[in-house]
Length: 321
Image 1 (tube, rainbow, N blue to C red):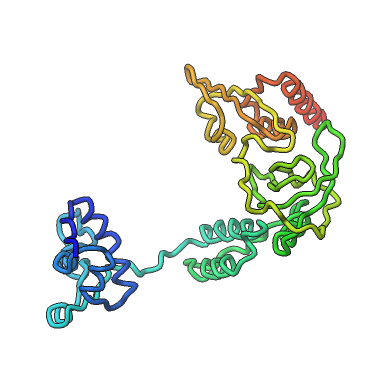
Image 2: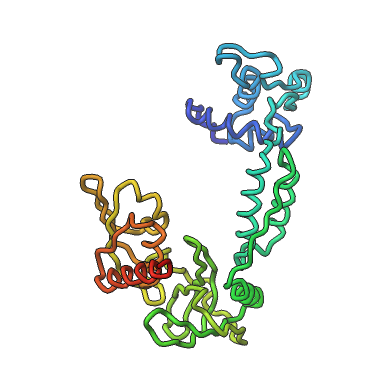
């Protein structure tokens, strides 16, 4: 048997962080079994367990600790039978209490996530929702996620994923004729409040990304999904249905407001002014992106999108006159 290497300080620290939850989960475990699990010698495991008894919560000012602020073990079992049992876990098993507002916010997020086909339709979300409702310090406010115009589309896509069949729909991109697509759905995503379907387009013979609010006459087909395991394009990279490249200019502090849009963008900042070249789905997406930032983002290219954004803003202002 090859002797195990001695532990360096960083390895020992990493093992100690993993050891406590392991021991709590086991309840009772032998020195030999724990040593084998962590790939250390039994003597090393015993030393780490004994060292736990001088570790715990920091005391007042971090200089001292009360006895119940330290981990403790059953010394008799350790000395007589080589068994490890933690008798004081320093509050690690205490459940954090959420405020009613915190719980309501998390409940709303889970309800939204549960609407994602292929992800939310599991018992996991139902269990998490129930735990959050019970774990709040007071009764959370009633949370209602209002149905959106694409809910029926999401439901049909979820059915297609469950049955393993392709979907057929009409798709109307801005400034383009409507087309009929047959798509092997892969996943549905939400970004910046917009829902998208990613899947294999039979017409384009490639992965494409579609805005769900531009999908119409969606139907299930009897065609089995053949490309459900194919890789999908990274978000906001090549592979969208009618992608376009845009160049934007904005103050450096505005960057966090653009979120996912900048993850794959080429960004340059000079004198606190940032220029970003990025790929968006189409002109309408670009108009929405700029309009939601209230004049903080300027479209430099393409010129057609720049003019369209100005016209769209003027049309919106005209509604108030």
